Image 1 (cartoon, rainbow, N blue to C red):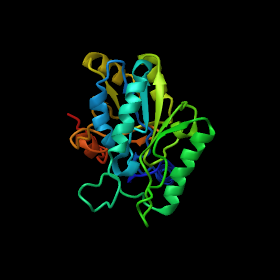
Image 2 (tube, rainbow, N blue to C red):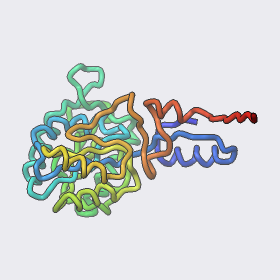
Image 3 (cartoon, rainbow, N blue to C red):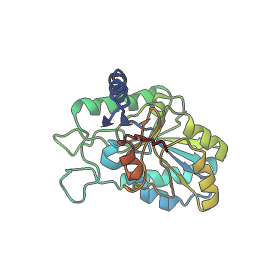
Image 4 (tube, helix red, strand yellow):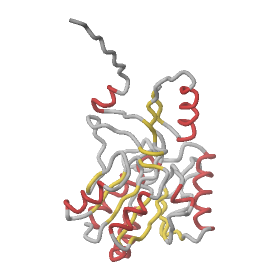
Length: 255
């Protein structure tokens, strides 16, 4: 059984399949982190933010919903992220210039809004967005939202929101940034942003996640894609994705 969807549904499928030892490939939720080192190219990151954080209005498993910034770059990155989010065109999903359409349902928008409210109740602040756009008479629209003054233990940092909400966190150094990134029940995607490729690769190697990008986040159908921890089990895509559905049989001859 191959399934892509929520962690809760994936666990139910795994339990059902376990009764008959039916193999499963589960690609589930994520709470991916972008780590911005002290030498980050801020302009490059901000240019990529609409794709990284807000694709499909945040209704995407690999969304980088946590941005972990070195303290020396926090103010600059925060401002660049606000400007990038402000440039996202929210509107009719069938219009060519639209980047963010509506959320999937009224109930889901209310759920996403409840996460924002939860963050605020725990001490976070809205750096940008957080409201329903006033320009639409119908449709379940929500502005791209950036939360600041966020701590890792907050609900908005630990649970998959599946909406256009990013939490902005601060790290003193690479080690702390890695620890923050790994402080999650999920491990699906992520990225590291730095002008020192060797150091960025070292950081990337220590993040417990199935896929990670350096100064980007790529999705290559020729490469294996799968998650760690509550992000799933097994592998999709690439040769490895086909082999996940293979069964092996050994036949032995005597001489």
